[in-house]
Length: 497
Ligand code: NAD
Image 1 (cartoon, rainbow, N blue to C red):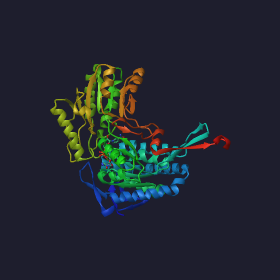
Image 2 (image 1 turned 45 degrees about the vertical axis):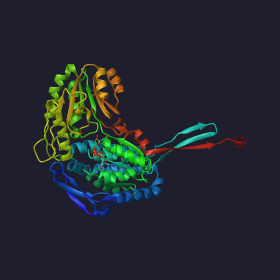
Image 3 (image 1 turned 135 degrees about the vertical axis):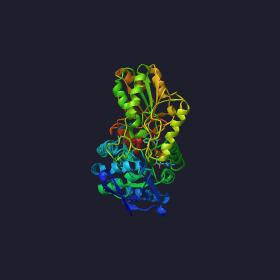
Image 4 (image 1 turned 90 degrees about the vertical axis):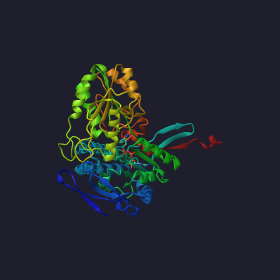
């Protein structure tokens, strides 16, 4: 199968296979179908990789089924943990290559990819490696004797992954799936698949038996839908947009009622109270909307600031957002890369244009940036009405919508006035207020005096239309296991009559 060579950090050559990784072999897609990958920094052609078709999805499922029915089903749980730890070692070893690939096709800053996404992926692999031999059921008393529960793997599972932090999000699925004893097919994102091609080689090198982890790239409407409809797939773990999440649920309902977990979008509120450390709040709220160019499901894209510090906050926030140096995400001096695609750039520009035309006060940015790539200035609007489009809809770009509030109750009510509920941030030095507000917010995660922060041992996921199910933390295992109850009748025969 063909390989391509790309140029990574410091001019280092990186070779990746372009084929579908099925049964530990790279192979071409049916009909030699390929898809083209663009470099968002230059908009030039970067690579072509195989694009899985329906037949390829069938082949991936067949190989996974054979792996699950074979030695994998009875493999010692500790061995699953060893394999995950080995994969973590290899990802660490090749982190420069993986971060370079995310910079090249997803436009993620090299330092952000290596220092945050990849190190978080490694942490997650090691965390779930530890769980592999600690998954336990319960022993229960029943009148006839006793019962116990077995926590069993589901079998052939699939993960469908977005482009914004593709390796980290893939590992959020892979690590608990494998720890729980499943086999997994990963559908990588068509806009940023190169990490997956590299990951596949590492899976093989780590020693996973053939078919335990298959990695295929392909278009969502073809390969993604084929997985969602497939009768042989027992679970889909999806991270992506809400409309596609709905399609996957429908496909699951119309096929084999496979288990589905959804990590969807967000419109995260950040609330800055008057008693907050303002410098700290400014630091985190600015990161909350500029990290990865705002292409973060947990982005703090709605910012509510107490009226008494509102004007001071706006001035300093606009100044912070302007401090960027945009360019090639592989270069260390770059602090702002491109957004993923021209289409995404145009979508973001359209939101900005609409807000400006509606008369909403622009305090920072508001335009595309010079150069041939998909660059957009960090942008902020102030006094944004609750019902404004930019306050309601997920933009998935570096655009903050700011409004003021007077009372705690008002701040909570504004923050909860969203169809989403993924992540929220609260800035206050009053510990009682922090407790009250975090309890009142309709959100899967609340951070106090910081934003974002991902840890392998803490569950991450949404409520409302941000989805259901959790990545990371012990709770993530629930999404990859089923419970079987076994009951023993220990009564003497006489009592049975
Ligand atoms: P997307 O929904 O377009 O695509 C996500 C994945 O789904 C891709 O692999 C794509 O190929 C696949 N897909 C597309 N159509 C499909 C279909 N009909 N059937 C099956 N699969 C299909 O999302 P995106 O543009 O890649 O990512 C951006 C979205 O993802 C945003 O809404 C963002 O909030 C969300 N996101 C959520 C989280 C989270 O953890 N909650 C994390 C990252 C991104």
